[in-house]
Image (cartoon, rainbow over all chains, first blue to last red):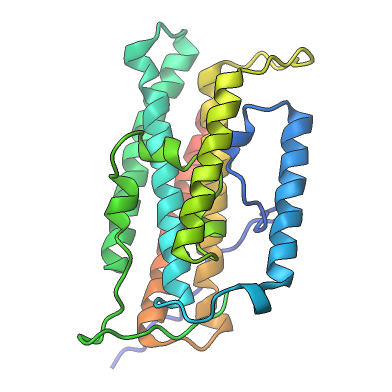
Length: 126
Length: 141
């Protein structure tokens, strides 16, 4: 009987801010300095919240933590998928420069690709 | 990220919250309703509180887009389209890293069979997203 290959988790890039609760799609509306302040504030709130997690977080949630995290990742992925789809709407709603037309078309393609990955995750979550 | 036991329903399967109702609800598009806080944060809260925070995030997003704040020091002459795609890439990188983190549970935590399957699927999705991120970065060059 052939042995199953060992599962190797993908690497997590350095600089990944696990404690970044605010979306970049939101922060981009601010100046770089203000966006950085928001990121910092978000990290502080997240950290303070996690420090007190033992007393504040509910313990009796119906789903497993893995399921909740995967579901959250799916929702975040759907967000990016739909955000890119919205960006590609500028192809029909605006007169774009050549460079931006290419970017908007790429946004449409990437949105479709993300949709396929999200559908697959949706299936796994059941 | 540690495995927490899942409560079983009578059929032996956990009852998931309705994902489609989150995404396909009436009114504004899903991305706009959830443009403030990441779900990777909100999943830590009970559903009622998460819903309230989602609304707060939307309110902040609405306020900042309506305010259309001018940035007099902005030396960046990137187009709106480019900035949007760049922001999407950063958000996507977060999702990819978060998924990669979930998949680490296979090695770091003793998981039940269902959770192992989910964590491995998270790893697969993270790998697929890494390829898309690479392609997206090339488009933005």
